[in-house]
Image 1: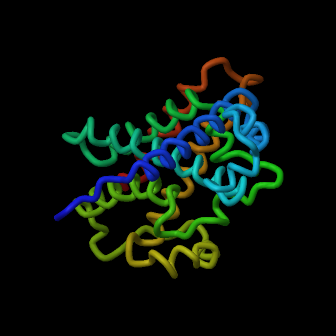
Image 2: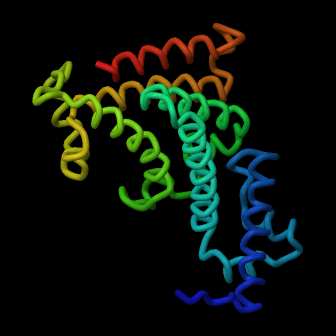
Length: 235
């Protein structure tokens, strides 16, 4: 297989793209998602705002590129947590992965807000720009599903999956069934979604400081809910 060395122009373009995204990240950290603007980035880099359009077609495109990078960083962090504990049972690794997600999020509150918080005014929400198979958020989720797949391959249902708590949920999960219905039994996906919403909710409230009225240390609550999630997944 032959490889092509990037031309000088291509290298310079890639370097400029990186500089633009780095400037946007600095604005994000300093002022939150709403602080990201092409005008501010251009001023920081000594460029004109119209010149940025040679690298990103719009502010939407720039924010999408930043969020994609962040999800890839988060995916790698979570995947490393699974690899570091590769000799442990799959559901134990899921616990380590969930802890890695929490630590990453607490260390990067502004980035977390851009990825998971309210949409930035004037910016198309990230999920509306991505498909189910190839976007960065899906690749992040796939790290969990891969390990869950290992667990259920070792411990199959034996022909009978547990019942859903409410038959009406089948209709709500119709998009999953249409796209990934052969991946896991629907009750497994329900358990994962229910657990994820609880764990994500705790992390989001911790990142945004919304639990300070109740506790000074959220980690014990997170660990209790994580243990409950793993226990339910273990069937």
